[in-house]
Length: 126
Image 1 (tube, helix red, strand yellow):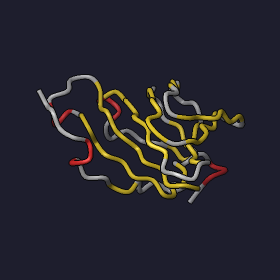
Image 2: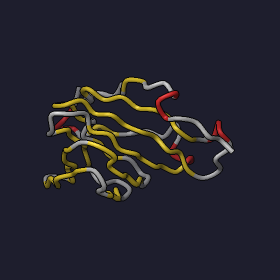
Image 3: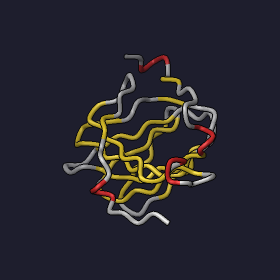
Image 4: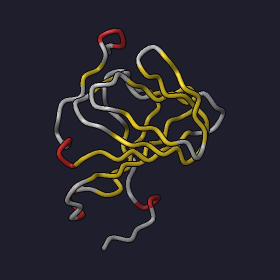
């Protein structure tokens, strides 16, 4: 069993083309003995965003704090604490902070996605 405060896990910058003001903490993964899923916590600064991207695996997201939006293709959906998002494989998506405080969310992905390519949408290149 792993029991640890998330604040004790180092936050690292998201270093993908198109990312701005994003940090990620690898909360649980294969290194912890998790056989199926990885849990990550993202923190997006006010005005920041993840890259507009897609990949061939699903992920599940739970908004912990802050306000923002998730862009699905060309449509945006407002987000706030308590919202749940399911991103299907190969859906173009992006998370944006539209509020005055950091937006934090949990993101779960299958461990099989580790090391897989993520494609930045062409209209949002580096």
